[in-house]
Image 1 (tube, rainbow, N blue to C red):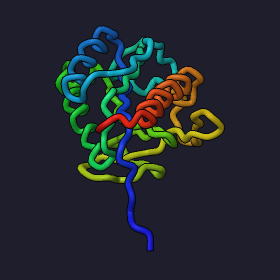
Image 2: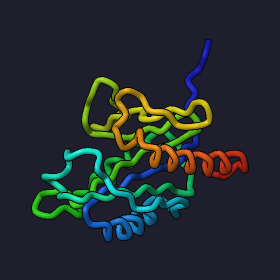
Image 3: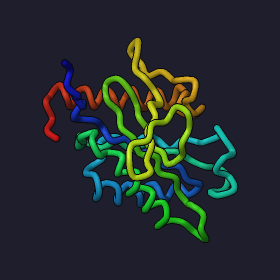
Length: 178
C-alpha cells in the first residue's frame, strides 16, 4: 500500500502586473515583509499578450517576477493567494485594481499558479482557491500546456522560470532549511 506523500519544499514565485511600474518596488517591500527576502527579481517587461486587463488596469501594462529565498511547504501555500488578493484590494483605485499579483510555486517538475477562477484544467484546493500546473519541466526546460497563457509560453518567461528553477535546485542540493 502506498501512503500519501507531499513534496515538502517549493519556491514561492510571484508575478506582478501593472501600468504603474513604481508599484513593483512598493509591493516587493511588502511581499518581503510577508514572505522573507526575494532572491530573484526579473527585469520589467512589456505585456502585449492580451487586452483582458485594459478596462480595469489601463494600457501599457508591465510585468515583473519575484521569487523568494525561503522555501515553503506546499501544504497550505495556496493561502498566499488570499493574502495577495488583499494587497490587490488595498492598492485598488475607484474599485479597480492598480496591480495584479499572481502567486504560485515552482519545484523541479512544474510551475503551479493559484487562481480564484475555475476552469476545466484547474483543481479546487480550499478557501476559494484553485491551482493549475502552468508549465512542466522536460528536456532541460519548462514547457507549456495547451491551456498555458500566451505570456507564460514566451521565451522570456520560460528563461525566467528556468533561472528560478536553477536557484531552487541549488538550494535543495545545499539542503536549505525551510
